[in-house]
Length: 540
Image (cartoon, rainbow, N blue to C red; front, side):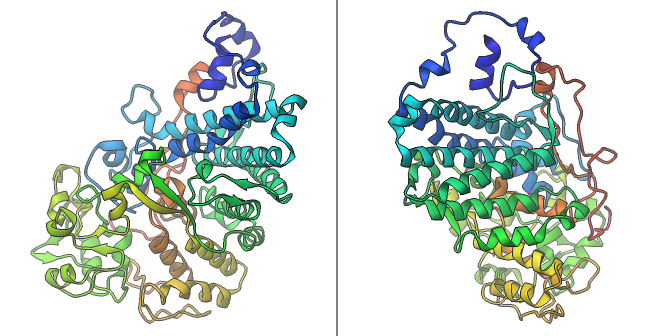
């Protein structure tokens, strides 16, 4: 019947009541029966092995929410309407428009649909592997591999739903899809994801298999031990980033997070993003494209030591731009990740490790190339472009960290800080603060003689702010839908007032599954909206 077809090949379709399903009892000769379609080990392997790519294309497509979440967290900004960047980057903030007729409905719902497609595929595959004739074809070693990878994808997909949406459905090979499924709160969905990750780790512990590189976009096959390390690190990430506000983030089991980090990767987990092989990091491509992207001053400006940042902040929002009363708003800083010098000419000639003042000769644009549409807010305008992934934008073939080791270091630093080990946290901060940024080291007391970051109120950031700074500087655009600043920002309480803290379940699903009414979050007076940033930006 059509319900079952929707379940397997659509996105969710899991909450239709049995009575409601009876209304759709129509024979469909084009609806292939899974039991017949999955007749060989190769059939099952193809279904399970392709599910991670399905999940990947749900979260890293430009048609997902990554680009607008990046704008909403000030990781980058653009005045262009594409992908909801301008709309969901507006000040004051807009609520999520949970209407299938809205032009950006597909952007905020895409991870939902693709995650559940991956879940449906893996569930069918794992269910088939319970059949003795198929498991015998697969063999013991590959059976462990296929199940481990399947549970990993179930973990990734459920974790993504929990990360973004207020509720979701927990579905696996044991779920009776003929019965009505009730949505569960995001914390319960994340708990289920952790359980799937643990099953994958347990199976990987048996060893003896490798994960083919084409399954997960790596340059080489992953050993079972390396695969387990990736999963441990994913667990640590999602345990923290699911938090909706500072209270939830503080309540995270940080001892467990540190345990997972210590069992996890020892160097960045890097994937080979090649658009020609359907591994296209498209959201990053557009979010870091010259002429599309600028590093707005809200967060990046905290590197400045000249007073330009405070001048920019203390100018009314409607008058903020990259030049105020004839003065260039330059970030003058000892942080080597930024251009060096005190004039536009000096900074153009002395690129930073990560940020530059772009030129047509090298980047095909200048800052003025994005100084357009003043009606959409000149506060978006900046002199700076984030160059770190320019090569990917130029060639669409790039090695990209899905989990940068700096992310694990800074999550551990945050955990140590919250547990009272300030010296241990400072040592981790100094790895990139000194080694990459060229800044003076900090210590257990939070000494900040470089005064980076320098907060909007003019004070030098303490040790916790230095942890946040290093996590932002080193992890920008890597993993987490290319928008890690958004998820950290909501957990730290740093998102601009009115920014949605989560997405509603898609309205179209609620209509089909008879779970009305539709609802939304965010906006100036909406539910689950940021109450205002901890930085207390003027005009907020």
